Image (cartoon, rainbow, N blue to C red):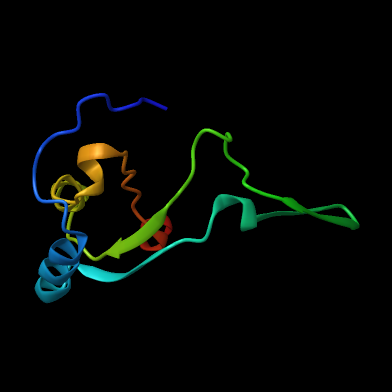
Length: 104
């Protein structure tokens, strides 16, 4: 994970970002997540199942929250993410949903 030694300036008001993108219809839902230590890793293999303490990812990385956006393109979602206050001092990942219609 890359550390940010010199975060970019800008408004750190997440409420502003949420209100703006809720109003535009781009933000469908979002919330802060519990501490990564409260997660569980679940696997089913053959006839057995395991449930282990999480997180699955490296200990130095953690997902702090999630926002679901409805955008026409990945580029539009990236532009909205670039405006998020957490992008200035943290790291955001933008993932599209799987396109089930493309399997057709």
